[in-house]
Image 1 (cartoon, rainbow, N blue to C red):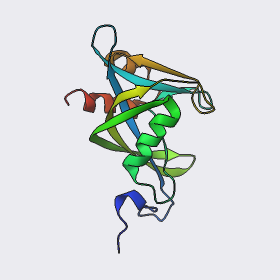
Image 2: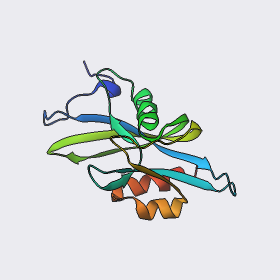
Image 3: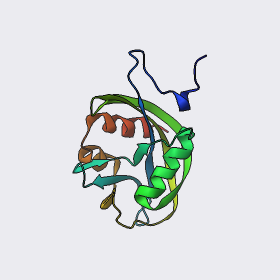
Image 4: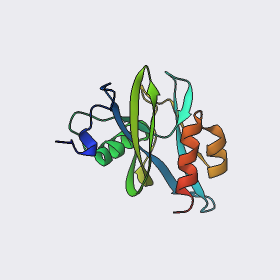
Length: 145
C-alpha cells in the first residue's frame, strides 16, 4: 500500500525523506498596491528564504505550511494555488517541500528564535535576495497566477 503524499516517509533508496511545507507569502503593498513577496531571514543559516518548515507527524501539508507561515512571520494567510514541490538534499537526507501561494490576511512580525527579520519586496527584489536558486523559481511560478 502506498502512503498518501502528506505521510510519505521514504524515497526509493529507502532513505528517510524529510517532509516540509511552506508558502510564497504575498500581499498588495499598503503604499501603492503593487505585489510584494515576504522573505524570512534565518540567523541559524544566515539565509533568506520563503517561510517553511518540517511537518509534524501525520500533519497535513497545507495545514503545516500555514502553521509555519504564522510561526515564522506572525501573519495569517489565505492559501491559493499549490506551487511545484521542491526536492533537495539537506544534511545528507533527501528533503521534500510542498509550497502554496498564500495571501497575507492579517498579523504582524515579531522576531523569534527561528526568524529575526522579514522583508516585503517586489518580486524582482525578492528573487535577487533569495539565497537558494531553487527558491527563486517559486516566484516565477507565482507571477502568472
